[in-house]
Image 1 (spheres, rainbow, N blue to C red):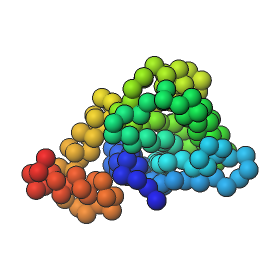
Image 2 (cartoon, helix red, strand yellow):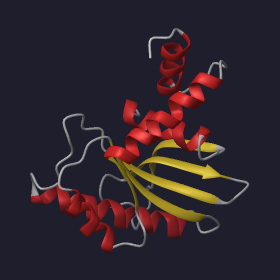
Image 3 (cartoon, one colour):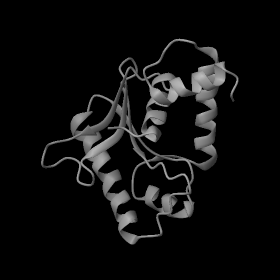
Image 4 (cartoon, one colour):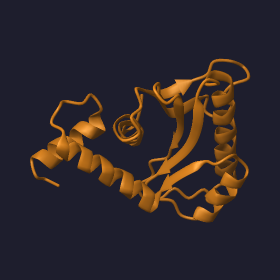
Length: 164
């Protein structure tokens, strides 16, 4: 089951990045596939542009600190490698973008170091994450349709009731 942070990223992919399909906890059951958690937290597909977004989501409100445990950094490396493999083997007809999402990250330099090991991971953390939340708040303000995404629906209720 997706957590609220994953629903946030899914809403962003669907309504800001115009993805036609959003899948939460996309699994690869092949023996050569995902090696870390055996899933992509959020997978967004734009069918018209043939663009795929493979997202790792860490929703640590007090801050995701990859230096706390060395095995956490190794796990992140494995997850990015697994997502690259997933993109290559399962999404060969799509241009893939791997993304890392977290509302608060300390020691950003470690993520930059991890990013050097892989081809252009889009890191959406701290201020960039806040900007994405603001984009969805603005989107929710303009639309009254009942969206199935619980994060987006909560924003709509809060915005239309003038709570935020």
